[in-house]
Image (cartoon, rainbow, N blue to C red; front, side):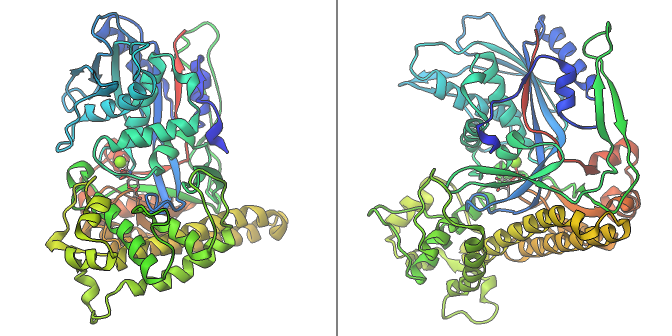
Length: 570
Ligand code: NG1
Ligand code: MG
């Protein structure tokens, strides 16, 4: 598994670019960042840390219930140029952003209190430097807490091409890039592997105030070019590359070479633009509704985290499954309910002991059992109302104090109209976890069976690929329906845009990321991508006046990219 691999550190730019396996000419953006760094700070950068955003193909809002998800890194990324600075101010940071008018320069320094480092992060507002600070936190407290060494004062310059608040996880890309930056300038890169970096970035991101799962950080760190990643979190972090029956119409990089004598920043790219085949391509389309997860966390993301955790307890109770085994109140996840339901002993951090077959079986059966979360007194339509706090505490079997301590003391949540949803959230989670397995199986099966089933017959191959794409598309559509109706993390614009995408010929279309705005992802026949984009431009009202680069910013085909790395200037 890729998690035990070291973090890639490149010292040759052309090798760094080639590892991205993409057709984009990265040199101008990297050059510009290095030149600007020198202009602002009067010295060359020592490192550039790079972390990509991601698109989640399927498996929404189930990573914090510890079920497997299926994202892929995108080519868009965050780059942070950095260098240590001579200053007596311990660990102080001068942070600038190339988009300075939107993200003004900041100067901050950590303080050490009782062997713990502290940085001031405002959780009530979305500040760009909060993500830089979050990434710094884990590095400080992992490596400098005992005072034997001092963190270096640092200058950093940030640039990003992942649109913010769009569900492509600009936040995780920022946190991963920032974590890497502070590891690099403090000479600690060799002390963490990819798995540890994911853990660090996950802990770090929570500092901003969103109790997120680990999907984005894992995708940003572990992804490999040309495949999606199946990532599970329980009993331990596990990632597996999944082949996609994707087309190749997005040009791919064949080689990149640095010209002999010239500037090593400049590389020439050899691109291959293959003939459009029968494969599918993932197209991201931004709804242009900005979802501010930090500010909205209380009534949206964090509320869902609490609802799914409480649902796990209540379901365990109604199914008479073991609870609070060692006498303490457990914050059980829905994934852990699966093990108990199957009677399989699992330990956090241990080996996986639930087989894929067992998981399939348990997910379908538990999905059906979620109706037991509906109070008996409910009449038709009461699902829409949900339960009050008092009712929720009662079915949890805990006292008010115990309930508060376990489920509310660590998070700030507020339910609209004071009503919580347990049945709908759990029904979404089990069905979505099942769809992820089905999606993965369809991809793997297509890859394995295609050569023998079609024996090189192009027409037969096309037919089989199409059948796979139809299965994947249908699963994506079901996912959207479930996100919209059961998990209620869609919004009218996302519902409209996914409908338009299906009408424009997509096999399937769904929101990606947390929802409540941001991007959709659609599976489109590769030969149809241009027509598809033209149709959406004409039909989705917010796109009507967008042309050229502006349009490419909001709707684009993506190719799975590689995970985070560091470039070291020599
Ligand atoms: P986005 O909104 O793309 O950052 C968030 C969470 C994920 C996951 C998805 C929903 C963060 C950093 N990430 O993704 O862990 O829960 O929502 O599937 O908040
Ligand atoms: Mg995010």
